[in-house]
Image 1 (cartoon, rainbow, N blue to C red):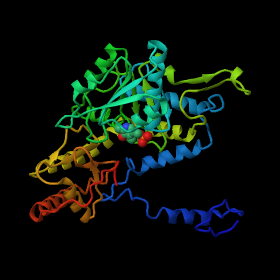
Image 2: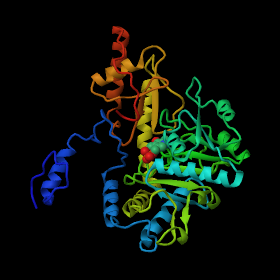
Image 3: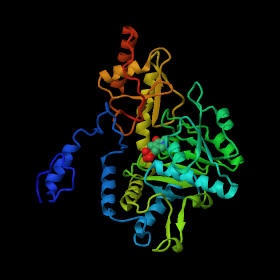
Image 4: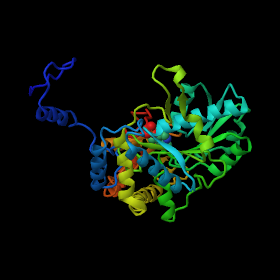
Length: 424
Ligand SMILES: *Cc1c(COP(=O)(O)O)cnc(C)c1O
């Protein structure tokens, strides 16, 4: 054991390092990582109080070495996954839930795409498959199209940043195998008109995927709180699959999401299976993209869901909604600024018809706030991951008003025009 670590060592050290020295180095490495409690930076860490992290940590560490690939060896993990899918599916109003836990929203979406492609190939003979998705859908849909060889058509939003439904329908061709909507989308926090979109898909035997990666574990509770929520889940006929991220507002550990299906006949198209004649070692079957799967992550999701219960999720959602309502109302009250579209939860964006909003963003940055910029239309993107903005909303609003007045009074021009994904 040594206690020194070469800062620039490129090779595996010959001698093992003493744990104390090791963890000191790791703490040093993390010194400049983002701080969850700092509202000016807004760390992308979904948070529902420290005790929830304690439950995650304890559950994860107890199942650290268990592997979801080996269902017979780790019956616990298999049961946790089944239970999480049961609870999640029911939350989304499917009385007979089926689905899987995946490594994250992207994997859930990839499985939704692959299963749609496979079903259409088998049942409709489609060899040149296409996806139709709004401009507001997550980049993971393009990633999946690229991975699995589909064409993807992105359809426009209107002047109010809402989906142009006619253009969306017009983009559907005889080769369309998947239509997509978001609840909520990342850009504006809007729920797409899922009932109209999914009905159009169902009439043509096309899979419809609701991307609830962000909103999935928030909207059911937001609805319970009495806010208006456009139907997005299995209550809507035609919704075939729904992704919802446990590692976002599900408050589970990193590396967990869910893909929920209306029924097994739809789900089976992402199960990979081949028989012993193709491999020297025998049959092999996996339901998701991974082989070995971290049992700890699954256990942590199961534990957190039971720990919080519906009441815990509802209370966390209520606190976040209050903060966002305060911010939206404050911004609407400032002449020259406008909240874009009709945000339902988690996120909103605001812009201006009068001034260059990127110049306002510069002014906020000069006052110590890090700002995420939206591209089309030019906007400022606001999101509450945890509770950081709870006590900072009034300060933000007054700094925003000052920044806006400077842009107006001094005729300031924007220095930074680059739009980036999420918090910068
Ligand atoms: C986060 C997110 C995804 C992708 O999820 P990852 O966990 O980052 O892979 C997809 N869609 C929406 C709306 C998201 O917010």
